[in-house]
Length: 393
Ligand SMILES: Nc1ncnc2c1ncn2[C@@H]1O[C@H](COP(=O)(O)OP(=O)(O)OP(=O)(O)O)[C@@H](O)[C@H]1O
Ligand SMILES: [Mg+2]
Image 1 (cartoon, rainbow, N blue to C red):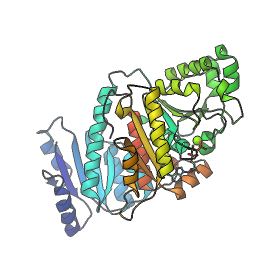
Image 2 (image 1 turned 45 degrees about the vertical axis):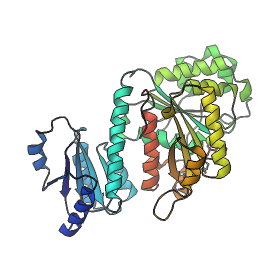
Image 3 (image 1 turned 90 degrees about the horizontal axis):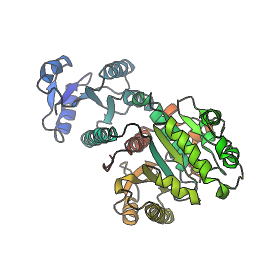
Image 4 (image 1 turned 180 degrees about the vertical axis):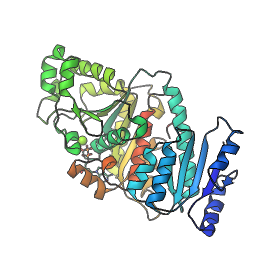
């Protein structure tokens, strides 16, 4: 796999320092003076993925525009990684939306580059395996271990994030809110819920494609939302046949279905979990919640014996950060959850509470690069969950 290193608009001293640091992780780096040199060399590696690592300036508008332009035109042949001082969240989003570029900080370069390589390797394995059954939608059930841990935030952010990525423009994605009594997905997206769940439950046979259309809310990001207005409707009496009909239509309409489950366990929760490709259990990093996470995982595995290890994941949300950017009390998570596959999401109240209050998810507003990276990693896991037995990124 050829990896090229190009220095653009940086001092030669800085460029040398960056090159030296990334050579520790990528010893066979090929240094080039301009992109044209790749054209000569590429004939030697016709099918290998090619990474182009560029040491460049941070937040130079003209430079980022050019970078985005070049990355956009690559059609997946090359992948660009900009190595620079801090860039704005807006510029970061522009880079990764191309689908052919990413950014790493000068300080974190060797390790963050290795992470990008690993993530992309794993994603292409997932995509290859998923293509075995391209017709089937991918369904992910998000199950909170406790109330208020950010289950709805994850579903909403992941859905909108995916929908705003160029690569997913044609992918039909929906979120389904099964938290009927305290439903709040629509508040987070500033749209109106349209599903009449009581009507569906009372007259399950009436639900057809036409009626379903009336029940769907379209968000400006392209994400579809299937959610009912909050009501004290007795969820325990929800007609299972009605829920079956609803999901049968949803499965025909969408490629990716993200389900927001309520914290309370109902008889139909088992059905939802049994029909999902993966289950993501959400919680926070406190000892009581870690215990609830462990118990919820046990209940999930009990309800769905044989569910492969990599089809269950945990999101530990609202994590505090150490001074060096790591996760505070990570060892607590590891001691309670052992080998579970865990995704960490940092506490980003400035952005996430603001995003909830204004009904504008991070994909469309601000947020720290770190939070966006963390959410996009879970989103990619969701996309690949249809693949049989592949370890997630
Ligand atoms: N990573 C985070 N950092 C900071 N605040 C967060 C984070 N994730 C979620 N929040 C905030 O936590 C609050 C609860 O989140 P959310 O409504 O998604 O939780 P929930 O699990 O769906 O709750 P419920 O049990 O009511 O359904 C919201 O105000 C949300 O903005
Ligand atoms: Mg919720």
